[in-house]
Figure 1 (tube, rainbow, N blue to C red):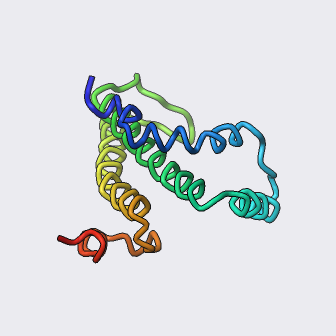
Figure 2 (figure 1 turned 90 degrees about the vertical axis):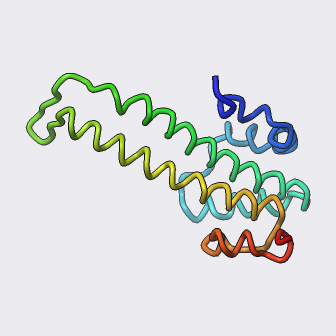
Length: 148
């Protein structure tokens, strides 16, 4: 078992989950299906939160995203060496080479995403005030609040 399997047992992430519990609870309730209603529903939920609650929710979403990327890495690494029998249908067929290529691309793309997720978490945890598109390695690591 790797350290990443115990990802959610890191004390900071346990704290984030503990303080963002209502987000998990609210996720069991079905949000509106209409896009406009969904945007208003999210705004209303966010307006009712305190600044501390919004902080935990924002960090929680970033941590969940990183967890999904790590799960994809683990799954792709597992599947790249395993190939199903030949799959053929009129519109789609896949051979072992295509299977391996696909999972290799998923793995490399997910691997590149880990740094992006880490930068987004860092920006969120330290409240750097950067929009997600500006969370590049150079900008985050040289930010005045983190430099030095």
